[in-house]
Amino acid sequence: MSNLLMDEAAIARALVRLSHEVVEKNKGTDGLCLLGVKRRGEIVAERVRALIKKFYGADVPCAGIDIGMYRDDLVSGYFVPDARRNDVGFDLNGRHVVLCDDVLHTGRTVRAAIEAIFDLGRPASVRLLVLCDRGGREMPVGADFVGKNIPTSRREYIDLRLKELEGEDSLSVTAAE
Amino acid sequence: MLGKDLLGLYDASAEDIVAILDTAVGMKKLLTQNLKKLPHLQGRTVTTLFYENSTRTRCSFELAAKYLGAGTVNVSASSSSVQKGETLIDTGRTLDAMKNDVIVIRHPMGGAPHLLARNVKASVINGGDGMNEHPTQALLDFYTMREKFGSFKGLKVAILGDILHSRVAKSNLFGLTKLGAEVTMFAPATMMPQGIERLGAKVASSREEAIAGANVVMGLRIQLERMQGGLFPSLSEYNKYYGVGEGDLKGAEKDCIVMHPGPVNRGVEFTSAVIDGENSRIEEQVLNGVAVRMALLFLLCKNRQGGEKA
Image 1 (spheres, each protein chain N blue to C red):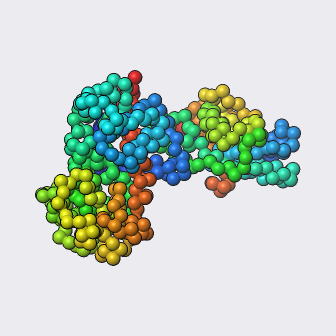
Image 2: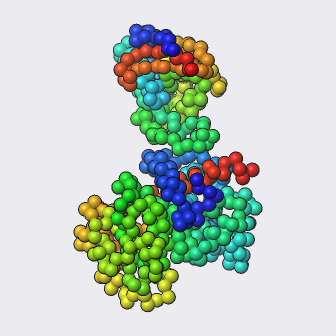
Image 3: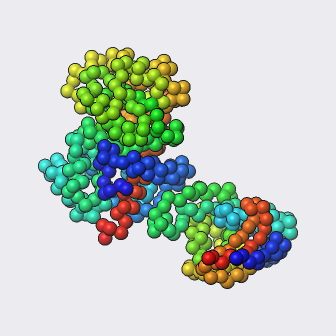
């Protein structure tokens, strides 16, 4: 069974609030940049970029990063990652990076993303923005900007649908059989 | 699945060959993006033990091991205790005692890798043994063929040159027949091993016959170092009757590919126009060689995960 927690309007409102919070925390848009974890985090980052542009007129650099090469289960799972080379197209050194993702769960993706970021340069700071925090952390990671807190059990799945991929915006929780 | 060692394709199954090629696809994707840092062999050591000269095979194995995070050690027979009379088995045991994980061996005697493999704990990979086999070269050849044609079923492969001395030709023959390709060989009678038909090869009686309708035209180096002399009158005469020029390729399929395990004797096996022509995959073969060797090391070490590692 599936339980709708955010519809299109709710997701839009959350993103508007998040984009304001990002600029508020940074005291403006100077030195800011957005990095989205591919693929869904990249879409979240791109939407936040567009909103910041709309409200503040600033074009904040924004790019997607692939964390495939940095996963912590490459050896334990023994597989060859299908990864892309990261080339964000701007200098990360000294920038205030806002790392964006769709769902925060164990924190392992974030750990990998931080490693990926530091292979690209040395940012002044890295903050974390997520559309949804479902709990269940296995790493010492916390989000700075959270769209919605949704405590879930391991047997539940977060089903986030995005217009760019699925043709609609919605977030629901599904309990596994 | 693959056991402890890879000693030749004579004993390998088609499934094993395909598994290595499939794994190499992912490796090549990473390599072409210059992503060369996988962690799977971290804490392991790969030793190349070469009793014969080599540039590409040794380099290729060493880089493949490094890209997977392994440490590498090179032992050349010419600058090691082999010069003091140490036996192959003792050299292997010495490496074992140092907790080495993989030995890549090249040796002028056929069967040397097999002898070594029976006597060491490390995985042994045959990097070429005498006139017997050179399995990783054949695997990279298969990878190159599959990349172009998608499958081996009914693929026509013409192998021209010094078949007698060529371990590449034999590994290709053993593997390709298992994969469903047709292998036609052509060489001066003095360089054609007797009875090769019984191993599944078709023997052509002319260059034109060998190349006719071929999808793959593979040249082999004339191995002067293995010849006692007198197998053919001169290099220029060899080129005239057995070498492949642009005109000769007209008999092959239009989209055929030209391959050579290298090093190439320009103007002997192939003319420069063929080597540098648009059908040539000779450089691509070198890149594929690294991907295939990464895949092989990856799979061999996977089998040993949790076992030997102390």
